[in-house]
Image (cartoon, rainbow over all chains, first blue to last red; front, side, top):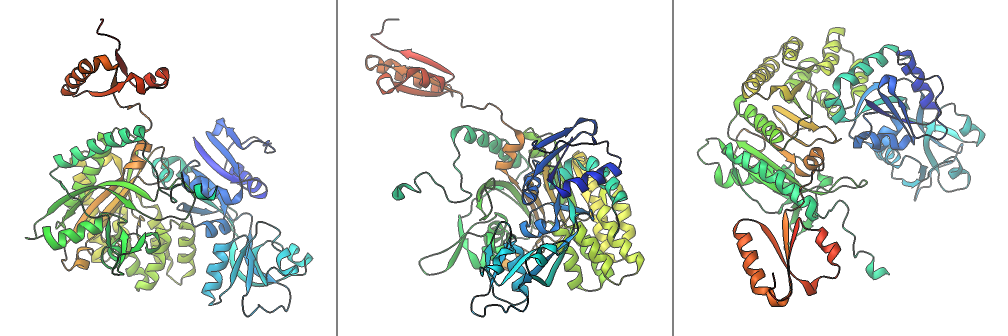
Length: 207
Length: 391
C-alpha cells in the first residue's frame, strides 16, 4: 500500500491524469469535494488531500510515503525528503514584482510574500537588505496599498499581476510539480516506489 | 495569569519521560548495552557541556543546531550535539595511546536545537559505539554487524541499512568534473536528496554524453552486491576502484556475519557534506519516517584533536527505536501492600521478604489513599493488611 499526499485543485487533476497515463486504474471521477482520504484498493493506493504547503510535512514525517509538491514549496520548506522526479506539470515561476517605476524604499525596503524563506535567501544573495512581511494570500494587494515595495510570488500567466497594475521585475526560479518520497519509505518500500517512478517517468511530458 | 504562563511549558523540543515510556526505554537500552558489552566495547561518559571551539566545531552537527551558552569566563560552551566528537576528544587526549584499536561505547542524551514544529525532540538519547584506530574494512563490517545485532535483539524485524561510500562518490565526481568546486555542487544535491536538481545540473554542464551518463547512472546504483560490479565500470581512477573494492570486501564480511540481508547498497548515499571519509550508512525502520540511526568512517576527526587516527562507529536513537518497536505493555511489574497502623511490622516484614526475592513492592498506609479503587488499578496485585491481625 502506498500513501500519496497531494494538494487539492489543479495539481491533483494533472497528477491524476499522469497516473492514468502510466496505466494506474484510477476511478474516472474522484469525489474530492469533502473527503480528505481517498482509497483506491485496486491499485493499493491511498490519496491524502492536503494544502500544498502541508504535503511536504506529511511526507517528511512519513505519514505519506510519497507526495506531489511544487518546487516553490520544496524551496520554501527545505524538508528532508527525496525529490525524485520533475513531473513537468503545473508550470509557473517565482518572481519579484512591484508597481512599474516604483523605487525601493532606501531605509527599510519591504517585501511581502507567502515565501519568507525564498524571499530572504534571494535578496541576501543579491546583496540587498530587505524586510520580509509574511502574508497568506492576495499578495498583489501589498504594493497597491503601501504595505511593501515589492512582492515575491508565483506567476503562471501573469494575468493577476497585470490586472492589479503590477509588473514582473525579476525571475527567481522556474517551478513545476515534483514527486517527493519519504527517506524511510524509499528504503523500505523501494520496489513499489521504484515501479511507480519508472512508470511515471515514461509518461512525463517533456518540455 | 501571566505569572503562570510557563508553569507547565517546556522549551521547544524538550520532553518529559513518564513511567510507562521510561520502562520501555530502559528495556531497550539495557538489552542493547548488554549486547554492546558482549562485543567487548567499554562504556564511557563525557560531560554534557563542552567548548564550542573544540568539540562544537569538530561535531558533525550544523552550527545553527547547537545550543550555545557562556561560562563565567565568557567562553562559549555547547550542550553536546553528538557523542562522537567528545569521545574523539577523550580518545585523543587519554585513551588512544599505543595506536592499537580502541573500542568505546556510549549511552547519553544529546542536544540539537530545532525551530520547526513539534514531533522532533531537541534532546534525545543515543546509544552507539566508536571503533578508533582501526582503518580496516573489517572494522566497518564489525560496527555495521553490531548495529544490526542490536536492532534484532530489541525485536525489530523490518529495518533496512543503506550503505554507501563517500570515497567512491568523490572519486567519480573528481575524475569527470576535474575540480572540487563542481564536485561539491553535485555532492550537495545528493546530500539534499534532490535528484531532480542533480540531473538538471549534470545535463546543463558541457560534458561528453558518456560522462553525463556515468553521472546519471550513479543515481540508480542501488541494491545488493551486484551493484558493485556496475559501480566499478563507472570509475577509472585508483581511488574509485579502491572504494568499490572496499564495499565488495565489506559485503563479503557482512555475509559472513549473517547480516547482509538487512543491507542495501546505495552508491549515491551522501549523509553529510564533509564529515565522513569512507563507508557510511543510514538505518531506517518501518513505522518511523526518520532515520533511527546512522554512522560511518570518519578518519579526519581525530586529527582535529592533534591525534590523527582512523575511526568508525554508529549512533542509534533510542526514542525512534522505541517508536519503531511499537507499544508493548511493559507496565512496571509492581505489587502493593496496603496496611493499617496496627499491622505495620507485619507489612514491613512482608515487603522486605518480597524485595529480597527481587520483586518490586510498594508499601502504602491505608490512611494515605484517597480513592482505593483508582489506586488499586495501578498495580498488578494488592495485599491488604488491615485491622487487628485477624486473618
